[in-house]
Every structure is written in C-alpha cells, then in structure tokens.
Length: 220
Ligand SMILES: Nc1ncnc2c1ncn2[C@@H]1O[C@H](COP(=O)(O)OP(=O)(O)OP(=O)(O)O)[C@@H](O)[C@H]1O
Ligand SMILES: O=C(O)c1ccc[n+]([C@@H]2O[C@H](COP(=O)([O-])O)[C@@H](O)[C@H]2O)c1
Image (cartoon, rainbow, N blue to C red; front, side):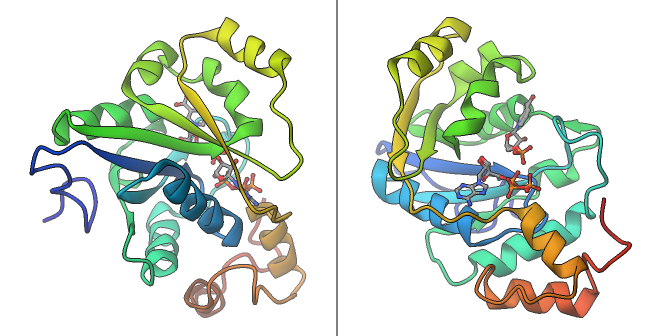
C-alpha cells in the first residue's frame, strides 16, 4: 500500500539530494493550467517528481460546496497518468477536518529522508496569502515555494517586501505559459452545457461527462 503517493514513495532512498514538487489545490476539476504549471515548475527547479494533492475541505473555500474528494482525486489520477514524473496523493482527501498544508508537509517530512527537499508550487497571486495559512511559521520551515508568474508579470520589490514582512518564506519565482482558465470557469461551462474539450485532459473530460459532474443545479 502506498503511504503518501502512488509512484514515488521511495524517493530519496539512495541518500542523494533530490527535489519533490507538491502541487496543492482543490482541483474541482483539474485543468490544463494546473498541469502546465506543475510541468514548468518541474523544469524550472529540477524537480524529480510532482505530486498533485487534492485538498479535503479547503481552508479558504469553506463558503462553497466542493465535489467529493475521492472524485477529485480520481480526476487528478486520470490527468497525470500520461506523465511519468507526475503522481497523486490521497493524504488530504483521507484526512478528516479542514485541510491545512502544514499537516501535509509534516507528513511528507516524516515520510521522506532529509535529502528530499519539498517545493510547494502555487500561483504567485496566492503566495501573499501564505502568511495567513495555519501555522505559517512551520510551513515556512518545512518547504520552499515555487511561485508561478505569468509572462509580463513583474514581481516588484514592493511585493517581495510585503512577503518578507509576513515571515521567513523561501520563495522562488518561475514564469508559466499564460492560460486564462480556472476550475470555476470549467464548472460554469459544464453547467451551461458547453464543451470542456482542450481545457482539461481527455480522460478527465470523460470522467466529468460519465459521472454527470458540474451540470446545472449541481454547482455552488
Ligand atoms: N490557469 C492557471 N495557471 C497556473 N496556475 C494556476 C491556474 N489556475 C490555478 N492555478 C494554481 O493552481 C493551484 C490550485 O488552484 P485551484 O485548485 O484553486 O484552481 P482554480 O482554477 O484557481 O480554482 P477555482 O476557480 O475553483 O478557484 C493554485 O496555486 C493556483 O494559483
Ligand atoms: O494551510 C492553510 O491554511 C491553507 C490555506 C489556503 C490554501 N492552502 C493550500 O494552498 C493550495 C491551493 O489552495 P486553493 O484553495 O487555491 O485550492 C492547497 O494545497 C491548499 O491546501 C492552505
């Protein structure tokens, strides 16, 4: 039985330094923006693998209903199957209560040897909120951050100063191909009966269609 993920549970067991990317998100549903972001972070930071970890009950989205965690995990699994460097983890979906990244990072740090360095991948826009994350000082100690910017997005000195004022976070930026799509956009399209083709991998689209997800009246 895998402990934290399905393909890379023994990462770092040879003692050599290695970097593991963590792509956290609600993934309701996963889309090409998430996947390109993870792939380009992998290249930019020399990550050996990226694990997609769908949240259980997301801390900052308590005001809306979220699709069942097992289904979101299944969509993530279908989305990453064709990339040998990608994996999924059920850690957050299986953990009861509100999902906090600190609990996940603690579990990963306890599982992997110290030569495995954790990189949490996130959109640069959401990086400013990390100081409000649960036990953010521990989050800062447990992982580095790979923050995705869009082409033309300038990380200003003011932004860096605002972040530095909030805590001792180690943040590195990388540029990701701009894709102006979001899970909410896909949900809205599905609810209007519009196609999700070319916005999410085909196996994910097939799951959404097959299970009748995000149809009118089933969303927020
Ligand atoms: N188009 C995109 N390109 C790059 N990164 C993205 C994109 N969409 C989301 N992300 C990043 O992926 C991570 C997980 O995002 P999340 O699951 O909340 O998706 P979302 O599309 O923003 O969802 P929603 O529309 O429901 O708020 C976040 O760090 C977010 O910044
Ligand atoms: O730990 C927290 O307090 C916390 C607060 C907000 C977001 N996060 C994490 O950030 C990632 C992206 O979250 P979201 O809400 O944009 O899908 C996901 O892994 C969340 O668990 C974590």
